[in-house]
Amino acid sequence: KHGTLMKGKLDFRIPHEKVIIDLKTSGSAHIDDVTHTFRRGRLAVQHAMYVDGVTAVTGESGWRFLFVFVETKKPYGIQIFELTEKTEKRARESYTNDIQVIIDWIDNAKIALEEQREMYTGYTTNIKVLDL
Image 1 (spheres, rainbow, N blue to C red):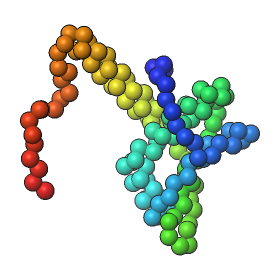
Image 2: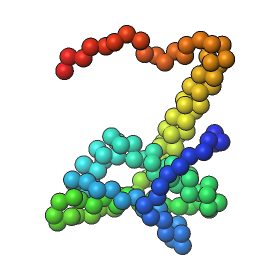
Image 3: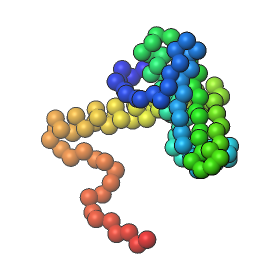
Image 4: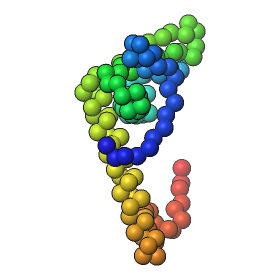
């Protein structure tokens, strides 16, 4: 959509079945823990980006994306997860919006450089003290 180059590294791709597999290790493959991991790590965004990337490279649509969670402790349980189309769509909207934010920032930075002025980043230049 944005004409930006991207890169990614697939764990597995099974071309004849049009399946992409991402292997994840986790302390727990229980659905509640995996759901938390998905939200915290924005794994749905990874799903959408990889599907879009493979589609762009191969020219073939209809790829499935499976997350295989393998527990790091005995008995090394395994769970396989697949996202709904609705979740994939929201993730795609999220990452395309993120890319647009970066493109806008770069465009504004170029203008600031041309005008020889500082680029407003939203942060103060003052030192902040943390009391943890």
